[in-house]
Image 1 (tube, rainbow, N blue to C red):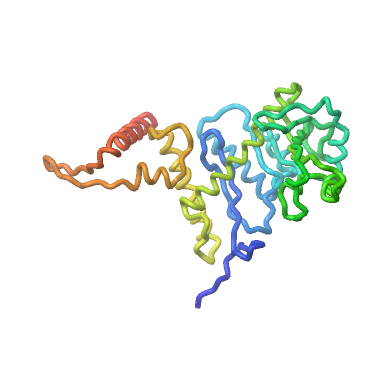
Image 2 (tube, one colour):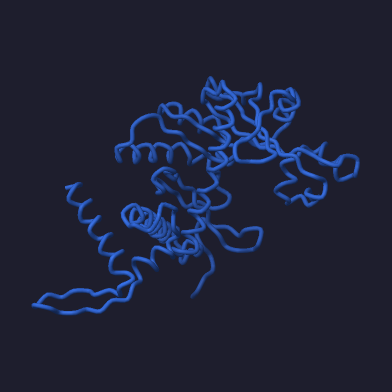
Length: 314
């Protein structure tokens, strides 16, 4: 008898049955280091310390040295997460949920202390005189603000932009009393940020962490992670790892294939290097695949680099 029940998944607000992947992604290498398949009710902060340990172990096994910088959104905002990172000798940048203490700290920033953000016209950043309680010593919070006109803000409680504006300021704009309002974002870090250039650079790098979202889009559309096929959590976890392995293989292949410096999607790599037509020919009792001229040089170069890498590794 067929059942629609699946272990450790829930229905989203859209009514779709869904699981939730929590992954540690190595930004420089562009590969996944550790992952867990959870449901929407599970708190990522509970699983994060163990995942941090696995990610560090994987990075060290790959030969990486130096301090490791962890970046995450506000879903991983917890003192115990920061403590685990610091215990391993790492640095952190973790998104901070907006709260009353933060709004007070923002209000205390002098106008002259706001500096222009990097690659974000109209945005400004500042270091707050605030640190969350019970976090590691040396924790500091960086704020970013962006000015929006009234017509750019919505009264819809699900509006992502409007949620970044203080409630009192948003009410003044929606009531027509004010014409503009600042939207704010925050992150906590244990880095030594003393110069304006260091603050702006750290905020720019933290903002760019959202590129990791391309990982999930790519695995969803290119490797089948948009669908969990089984009622078994174990089977769905294997499906998740199959999709993430496809992502990693795509990243490794792109390190060797001469297809440009920009990261290509799995579908593009498949089209350029994998799903290529060829004829099986036999000459001198040897079987060979003969590719079309357009693909022959690219595939030959890639295979040569793979063989060289295997020899070096051996």
